[in-house]
Image 1 (cartoon, helix red, strand yellow):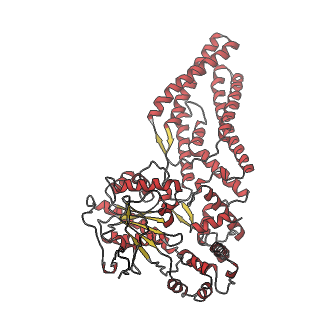
Image 2: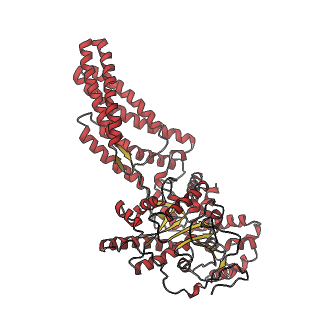
Image 3: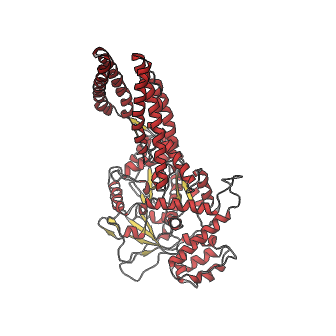
Length: 615
C-alpha cells in the first residue's frame, strides 16, 4: 500500500491493488496490422529487445536489483508537469515504472526524473523491457523504442520527423518508417534530454509538446531527464505525471553489499560524505570494483564529497586497466598498456567535452583535434595530394586537346600552364579543407543543373573561347585564333555543362542514424568508387581521361584521404591508436565505454568528466 502522508494536500495511490495489464480506453491503433506488417513489427520488436537486453546485461548491478524509492508528481503548471514545492506522493516500495505508467492519472504519458547516477536510464530500460513483453502478448500494442535525444541536432526539425529518421537504425524503408509513426505503431521512450546543451533544452521540450498535440500524437510516451536540469528548464513537458527516483537508503546499500562485500559498509558508514555518493546506484555499483577485497582504503584523507568521488573513480580506473590480463579483443596481439589506455581515453573525453558531446562517432574526427603544429602539416599534405592530382589530370587533358589541333609542342606548353594553374587552385582548396565531410548518400537536383549549369556553361564557353582566340590570334594570326577560339569555347562549354552538371546536380545527403562503427567513411569510400567509375565511363572519352578520379575525390574520396591521414597523424602524435574499433571493443571489456550502433559513449557522464580532467 502507498504510504499515507500527514499533509491533507497529498494524494494517496494504492498501486499495489493494480493487477495485470491496464489499457487506456479508446486508444486503439488506426488500423489492424496485416500479416506482412506483423512480421516487420515482430522484427523491430526483436531488434529493440536485443538492444535492451544487451544494455541491461552490461549493467554494473551483478544481477541484484537496486530499486530506489520513488515519488509521484502530478502537479501541473502551464499545461505541463513541473516540480513544485508541494510534497510529492511517496509510492509503495518495489513499485515499478510500468505500474505508474499504467495509472489512470498518467495514461501512458510519463516523465522519469532523478539525480545523476540515480538509475534513470536503468528505469527507462526496465520500463522498455516490460512494455516489450506486453507488445509481444498484444499484437495491436505499439512497439516501445528507445531514442536518444542527444542525436536531435536541428532545432527546426519536428520530433516526428526526427523519430522517422532515427528509426532507420531498425528499418531502411522510409515509407514504412513514416507509416509506423503516422499509424502510431511506435511507443517512443526518449532519453538524454539533459544531454542537450542548456540553450537547446527548452526548444526540444517545445518540439515534444508539438508532437504530443499533433495529428499523429502517440498514444503513450515517456521522457527521461535529470531532476535539476528539468526543474530549471524554461518550458514544461505536457505529460500527465512524473516519478522521481530517490537516493538509496542505508538498508538498500547494506543489502547490495551483503553479496560478497559485507565488510565494506562498516568501513564506509563512518564517512557521511562518502555515504552520500553511495546512495546513487552508479557509485554503489562501482565501489566493489574500485576496492577489491584486501585493498587499502584511505578514505580518512578526504574531507569533501568531490574528493571522495574523484578517489572512487581513480581507483576504479586503476583496478579495471589491470583486470583484463588476456583480452578477447586483441587476442595474441599486444593490448594497450594501462598508461596508453588512460592517455587515449583522456584525450577523447577532452575532445568530447569541448564539443559538448556525450556520444562519439569515429567518422566525426576532425583536423581541429590535432595540435597546431601537426594541423599545419595535415593541411599541406591534403593540399599537395589534391593539387598534384588535379594538375596532372587537367594538364594532360588540355595538352591532348590542344596538341591534336596545333601540334605537340604548343599542346605541351598549354598543358603545363593549365596543370600548374589547376594544381595551385586545387592545392588551395585542399589546404583550406579544415573539416571532413563524409558523404553517406547522394541526391539529384534538376533545378540546380538547369538554373546554374546551362547558363554557366555558356558564359565559360564565350569567355574561354574569346580569351584563347585572342591569345593565339596575336601570335599565329586571326584565322588560327578564330579556329582555336571556337574549339576552346566548345570544349570548355561542353566540359562546364557535363562536368558542372554532374558536380552541381549531385549533392550530399546525410544519414542521421549510425548502424556500424565508422559508417560515414565506409559509405564515402563506396560512393567515391561508384561515382568515379561511372564518371570515367560516361565522361572520360568525351572530356578527358582521369575525370573520374576528380569526381571520385569530390564525392567521398577526399573525405576518406583526410580521415585516414588524420588518424595516422593522431597516432604518430601518440594521441590515439590506429585501430579505433578494436580499441573501443577493448574499452568495453574494461567497462569504460559502451556501444550502441555506430556510436560510443562512456558508461557514465561522471566517468567521462573524470577522464577529461586527467593529465
